[in-house]
Image (cartoon, rainbow, N blue to C red; front, side, top):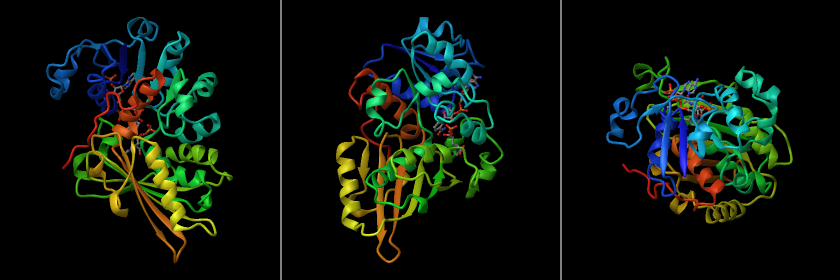
Length: 345
Ligand SMILES: NC(=O)C1=CN([C@@H]2O[C@H](COP(=O)(O)OP(=O)(O)OC[C@H]3O[C@@H](n4cnc5c(N)ncnc54)[C@H](OP(=O)(O)O)[C@@H]3O)[C@@H](O)[C@H]2O)C=CC1
Ligand SMILES: CC(=O)N[C@@H](CCC(=O)OP(=O)(O)O)C(=O)O
């Protein structure tokens, strides 16, 4: 199969290049760039020194379906609303890593992104690509809206409990921390080294664009549509997200039920792991891999659970999950092209 990547020079795109150039079912990669066409990706990024087909091609949505069989798009949110419809209209299968097609309500998208929503036809058809939860729809989709990094970590930790009605959803508080690569390759004031290093910054409190994305999925699996509290922090590390989630359990829910629910969930999913010996995970446990590691502690005094999930934001939070979805869409083994082990230390 011939596969194209739009946004190959960004952090998510580079991770796609790393994974897809070793994918056993991919014959040829074509890399697209809006600003560096004609250049070679290994000149810009020497870690790719010697890569075949490193030339950056112009993005022409009418030509892309003639050049490749499948497209990953990893451009900033707002770009794919205009870029992807002409490609999709030609029948091409696409995975979009941006936020454009994730929210089903156009008013919600406008409110949280302050942008015009994409064509409703393609928003309706896009399948939200949380691999473990929408597996069957993903397998039959033409287009995947790949989830945001924070929602991936939070939802993978919360949904098993919410789905079994073990939590009072209105009490959920998600406290999330991300490495700086979550902000993309272009530095901003807060991600610039002198601000980010030796510092812990909280940002977008009660305003983060991932709040409605998390709520959309939680409400689908719960009996209420209560809002949640979600806050985000920038941590001076390159990769990784830790999501610490607090919630009251419903009356009568036992520690044993929580344990059984998580155990069954991890047994069913290749990329979900529980921390050994009831320990709690840390971001280094999953770095460079597509795993989401989960741990928890239940406090019988407060009847609250503290659940912790960790992912690599560029892998399970972006490119790794996209490759998992690509495998599901094409009937390939779920693990094809995905590294078997995290990088440690
Ligand atoms: N970083 C992360 O952890 C995660 C990111 N995401 C999402 O994935 C997408 C990519 O993120 P990330 O890689 O971090 O961002 P980057 O800013 O690192 O990269 C984005 C890339 O998009 C390309 N681009 C910019 N403008 C356009 C345009 N008008 N048309 C086509 N391509 C364009 C640029 O490459 P060029 O100039 O060469 O075209 C750039 O390298 C974003 O939508 C982001 O929200 C999702 C989950 C996690
Ligand atoms: C550290 C950091 O800045 N992270 C970004 C998350 C990027 C992302 O995944 O956002 P999309 O929904 O646009 O894909 C943020 O908090 O906005």
